[in-house]
Length: 247
Image 1: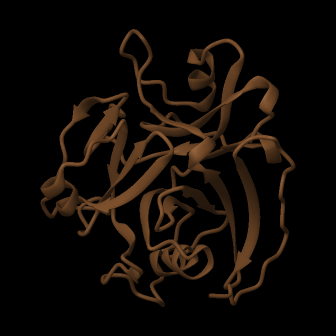
Image 2: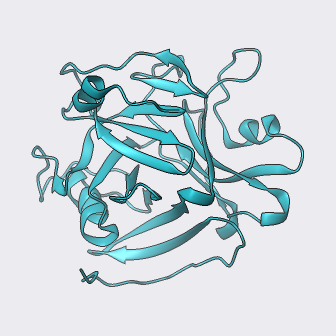
């Protein structure tokens, strides 16, 4: 299907790596979307340092990486408590820190259906949380957040097109094959319906997951961007070799 909407301010950064970012105008709002080729990417979740302390910033993640590598594209990756521990399921390198939560609850996380980003070598999936609990797929890394933005090609049923609840928002979407993932942040305040339509109608991802609003951060050194703010919880990032550039 042709993307029917205006592309503007395209910022394709030349890179030998497996990610590229673009800023586009979609329905009168700007979004920055970073596309990751999963088959060639080392995509991980980060939460704590070796002493068990929450990392909280892109810079602290960078200090943990092996010599000769650095942090490429990254963003905050799920909601967190006041101590910055994950609200829902969290798995890092096969170790589970927090169990999955499938009950209704307050706030955006509890606006069911919510979902899980599941990462394995060369593949990614966004899976509705109750379906995830039933099938219990193996994930090298996993983070739960909510609400789902797009579920099997449909917008979350609770989203309202003309809602006046707007925020800077970020989230993730995956293609049907699981070999391409997009990290997206709105560059201006939008409502859920607008944000979800960007994934469904522009990126054409059948499933997409909301990460957060207000605390949304993007680290994309290839376009000279690394958002600042108070410390965050889980971080999703691409680890690249130094000679690959910032992709």
